[in-house]
Image (cartoon, rainbow, N blue to C red):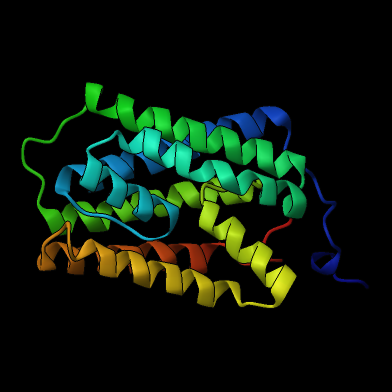
Length: 206
């Protein structure tokens, strides 16, 4: 008798309603984590880290900087991932840009211990990223560039991403204190650990 546990389940795609709700929930979580990092004076890696650097140096809105920095990468996203992914990613980036400006209108921390804020903020961001990834959306222009260069020139995406994060960390020495830099590095490690544990190709059916 065949083992019914070994019978593959039919693949069921997410509906557009599920995608919309997931993108809303994922971006709310990521933007709330960003708010915690910003109020504690921390930063992170990738495109968000670059936006934090520009925000700290120029005092322009993080949301506006994050939105503008991502604009050049959508061309690569269309070429590599297609229109559906690009539209979802554009929407997610736009929502994070808006939500990071809206959150402080409803929530403000009178006291926020930096290490707690950085670690917990990155946990929230990590869970938000997983929601977005599961619905084939992204937030990182640098991630798109890394995947494109890997396909085009054979440059390992992971190594390029590490190189970008290393440059951001070096540049951040001019805008944040050493203890905050250490906290930011630990937070980025937690964020990447959450993504690595929960987002593996082939693990999920949808």
